[in-house]
Image (cartoon, rainbow, N blue to C red; front, side, top):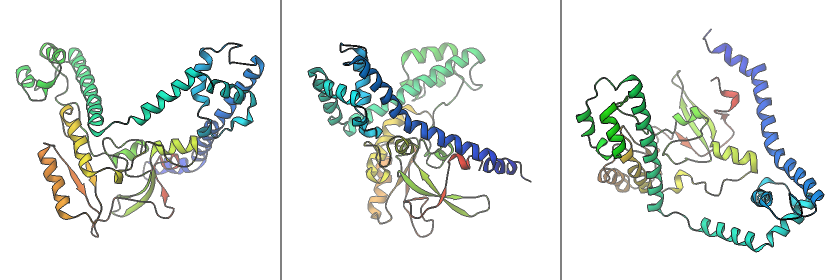
Length: 332
């Protein structure tokens, strides 16, 4: 018997039943929580007769109002809670509340353009880089630098020359524990190990997809996968997708390359990504992606086009398939 076989059987037996029951209870709790909170709020407002903390409008009303405003998404009708409904309508008539709502609409309408989006992600990558380097310097102070470390050579490298002055000074004094700290892999498949919650800089292929996985026996198996964020959205709000959700097919191939170019200056090791294109993409445009990647100075790039020989690793869902990466399959 293989070492993991007994564990699998137990998880699919009594342990599996308990895990599934626990998950159902959590889901039921998340769905029931908004109604319970509304009920408590309704009792409080019926008692005070005006606002949450008494006769005067105060900070408690300001804090609670944005949450109550999402009652449609919570699928908890306000008419079921008359005191909350009356309170909500009173607040909606207040000039300051109306101005606050209008400001929120303006911010949502002012979407980031491509340049602003790249700058934002570049700043995020820079923050990660600086935090990683400061942590490695801290480890070097405690345990010493990596064995091949030479301060002058290290600090003269192109990447280290772009580090903030305080980090360069600290490296000169204390050294650094790790020769390299950051890498970004095309993590589509690896993301399954984290319950499909993130694929790094790869855009989400689809809210739901079917993934072919090569087993140790040399056979492919197809698993149904659901994006983790979409799963949470549906648990809390029912069907549909988050308003900001974008699938890979909606992203222009050049935008893939530009996003990698925005992050690469802050990654000291390898960085690459996979661009999924349609099977009927013209060859000249297919080849041009590699030329543009070279022009941007990218370290690595893969363009994947489904074909009759290799097929597609990911595809849109068809009929019901084996569920992947849920609690029921954690031991696989």
